[in-house]
Image 1: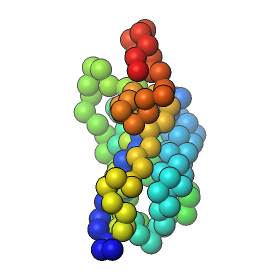
Image 2 (image 1 turned 135 degrees about the vertical axis):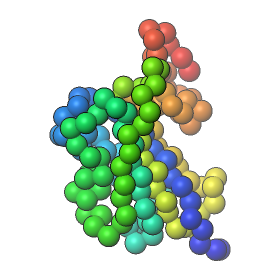
Image 3 (image 1 turned 30 degrees about the horizontal axis):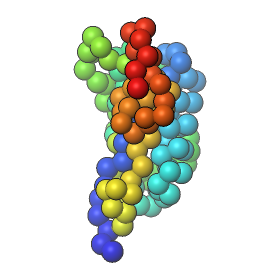
Length: 134
């Protein structure tokens, strides 16, 4: 099979706007995405990190460095300030060289970010604005 660059998405939420909470949540997410897809640093071209404007205590990319990713290009961005955004949300986009097909890629959404992709996690009930949604 041919090696192609694929995008692997993931998102999570931090419990608080502290460096510890941001790095813990981001590290947990990165480890889950790596495990779900068997990602090795040598195959990663770059990783983009975004945070909602209510997270300012730390750069989430530091969590990748803390996991030992020293050679991968990492860049962080702040998302636009939307009224209905999920609070304290961290998103990642990994640009990954792989032989896997799009159907084999496993995107990972955790914690409050499950609401972003209910189609991937139909077994989870998500509470938004006080009402339960599938």
